Length: 346
Image (cartoon, rainbow, N blue to C red):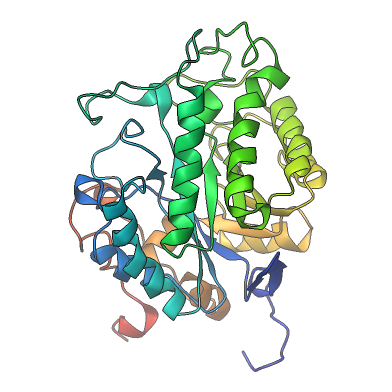
């Protein structure tokens, strides 16, 4: 594409996301990879992320634990210790060296945790009538956000979906609170806002995003009125002036909501809007062109195609992803061995 020539695809058009000048709207979605042995980010992650980096491209890291009580899967990274923070530094540098913008997704799994990965002197933190861990959790999220910026990340994405601790407090099947964190939608969402506010105070609203998945069902958790919840969150988050909201579409195979289910949320939220969930190139171009979203996050396709924006630009075929290698521990297979266009046989 010649310099100054407008892109033929809306997905490849530039976008100003707060202080960050994006060269295109194709975002690397956060994807759990389970290659961080003993919760320490590994050197091979620098290659993995840099492979998927373009000048002015936005990447969101795999979910990263905020404390030793936060884990549910083996070999997922943390950012609560100095060692973990230091291990992230060269990984972030590898992305920045290629001109990318890198956000760290931070999470705590809460009641989804199996209890098998936490330190022996800790217990799984999940909703309870006592709420004894509320201040501790907020502190963990605040510290994780600070550590992320100290490691060089450009910002953080708060993971508040898929049945993990922040969403768990408002799930109909789990929230039994009768106090300030339960009983109705406003109260059920209050803890999410406390975490958002704490992180905004710590690192600034212009470096904070949030991920929400109102329609998702995970580990038996569901939201009774996802449209009401999503709209409430989109409107209420404006108070904090955060950079972006990242919403997950209903499953394309098990659609819960109506067509254009995220549109009301997009209209209500005043910051950058990111949509994710089963998008193809054509779907993404249509969504951006119609103003349904500002950016589109791609998971499996970006995993299997480290040069995904280039393939979109050229109309090139995509590599197929291999589900069998999504969560294995190998530092190469299913991780850094997907071929680029220029490495394919003619």
